[in-house]
Length: 224
Ligand SMILES: [Zn+2]
Image (tube, rainbow, N blue to C red; front, top):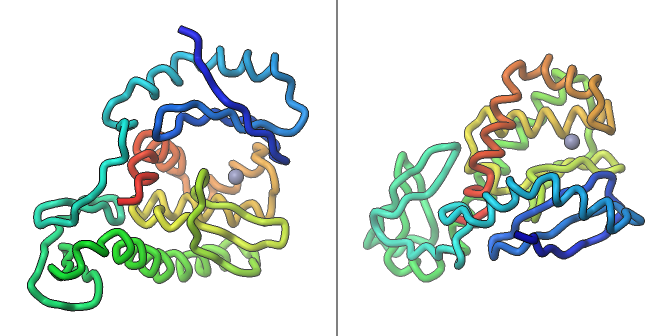
């Protein structure tokens, strides 16, 4: 079967093929990449792309909207936690081995949980990154926890480090891997063997974290 795809050109270095949540295929390509080359790359990966497109659970036709009712589960640091709706008219979301949300806040659940995750990501990722930067002997400018669309983290030419807030849903080892990865870019801009050596020194099991992201990353991409 022919795979239909759209191409988005930008000033990037590598080509990436993404199956979006609505099952459309988008190729993100460096400027001036030939259409032939892109077609060949898509063809090479057709089986994997096909698998992704037809994966029901991973690529639901409609984004499952959480209702924020008791019994629902939410991911946090690699685990699913149950949600309980309380009668308290408190003004947000709280967590104590379970998530709690007030009855009157259920409708605002999307925003409240997003805020809670961002706050939690900031509290956990920023000190972690600080400690890892110290170990690596690197200095960054600023750390920002953002709504990144296609990446878990990035390192800008001005040495600012960005992390996707959704990372806080991943296990700590995965979070640490992304932090190590981005901070190592302060020493080594590209994914050279030297880059991966440095990552491995900091985190010998980093391949496991990479595998985890490959397998479960899509669950992190869904907001909740
Ligand atoms: Zn990288």
